[in-house]
Length: 416
Image 1 (cartoon, helix red, strand yellow):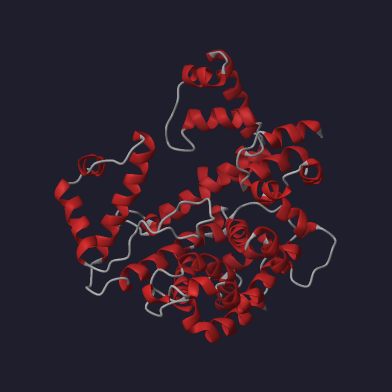
Image 2 (image 1 turned 135 degrees about the vertical axis):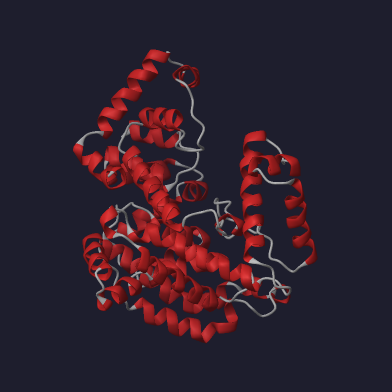
């Protein structure tokens, strides 16, 4: 137990990947017990609840205590933004350490809780001058009815989802409808992050549902990855396209939005690598385009009511720094390839989580799994304070582990 507690103490920010890594090595019961002991011994309980919110939310969800509204209870304890982030990430992740019944109970409670959302957001409602009445509350009654309707729709377990997806692929209309209905909550959880950017929640949900239907049409169940992972990209694409189409009074071609999206993504990359804001020339060089194109994009932003693609899509309390521009796709991007890469990335993370922390680190650095930057054996050795030969041994051992059938099986759909 002391070993688990010491390891937890060294985690700066606990995310789903880190938490799943702990569970895969020590088991959920011991990990949760360790978090409880840490909380009991601490004099700064509120800080710990915030720092390790994922673990404590799981503990509350899986506890035997029955609550009339688990979602409301969690929101009061951790804050609605934290709980919504947990639900959103859990729904589209490849993790499954909570019983389906428990998750369904939470999701249904979240849907019901939306009916009282107005009372929890009075402060934001006062900002409606900048939203031109295009906010969540405009369609309040319609949203309530819709959320109540989808709250009664059953979710699918993994094996059910695959069987239904295969049937839908073969043209079974009932299976197609069931696959769509079981993922309507996913659309809502994604759409909520784009509220107050020009469209009402109901409009965002409708656009997201179009993306969901497109995902059902394109999804190949034989490739082995989760439908929700695949569908997330299509849902976000549909929503951000709609925002781009409606955000300005002067009609701006979609390619202009796409160019601005590229520029913003490039600025984020260069800012991280250069430790400073890049110049227009640096951005143009990175994208292999003329500087005049950068200036043209900036002019469009200044002369229209175009929504800022630097606008965060989540609340201030969220650690994720994603912005709207990140999700407006380039015409150069192949949607199939993007969805495939997203699923591959999720699966690789799941496989890596079964390795030791040092093995994970070595493979991430050797193959550029985090930021596409690849390091040599010598460089990694210097980072970790060991010899080049030791890093080679760790790398080889980690690769041998990945080749074990139980892990290899997860990656097979992407290799074939």
